[in-house]
Length: 262
Image (cartoon, rainbow, N blue to C red):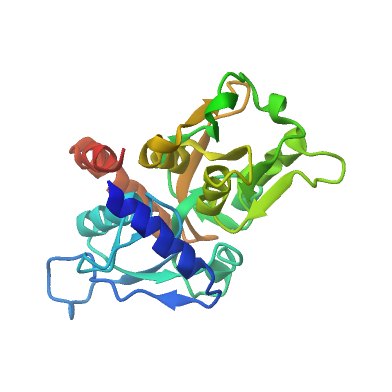
C-alpha cells in the first residue's frame, strides 16, 4: 500500500507542469497494432487516484480503475486507445477542438455539462464526502464546518459546495489544483477538512490511516455519478462505451476491477 503514497507524491510533482503531456501507453488490444480498428484518444487528468495513476512499473505507464475499465471496454468493443494527460483546468475544451475523443479521470455528470458534451452511462456512483481531523468526526452535516478551514479542488463540482462553509470573504476556503492537494492540506494541518468525492477521499483515508483522519458524509446532499464524456453528437462512440460497459458488468469484469482498487 505504501507504493500509492509514493505515487501520490509523484502525481503532485507532475501537476506543477501545465503543458499537455502524452503518455506512451500500450494500446488496449491483443491484436497486431497495424489493423484497421479505430483509435480513440482519451484525455485525462493524471491526479485522480485511484482512477488514473502514473505507474512506471506498468508496461503502459498507467494504471488505475478508469484506465483498466476503458481498456476492458476497448477490448470488448474492438477499438484501440491512446491516453493523453492534461491538467484539469481546460480539460473539457479538448473535446470541442478535436484533440480528444473521450474525457476520463473522474468526470462528473451535470446538466450544465450535458449542454456542451455527451456522456456514457454512469460507471461509478459517489457521494460528497469530507476528510477531516479525528477530533472533528463527530459532526453530522457539512454546515457544521462553516467558518472552518476547508480545502477543495477548484473547477470541480465540489466547488459548488463552498457557500456552505465560506465566510463572507471566503478567506477560510482553500482552492487547490487537485483533490490530493486538498487532502494534503488536512494531513499537514493547513486545513480542517477536505471536501470532494467519496472515491478518492476514502482511498486516501485508508492510505493515511496512521494520521487518524476520518470521513463524514451529509445525507442531505445528492448522489453523483462519474461518466466518460464524448464530443456533442458523437452518439456512435457513446454507444460503444455503453455497450462495452454493460458487457463487462455482466461478465464480472467490473466487479473484479472495483475490488482491485477499493
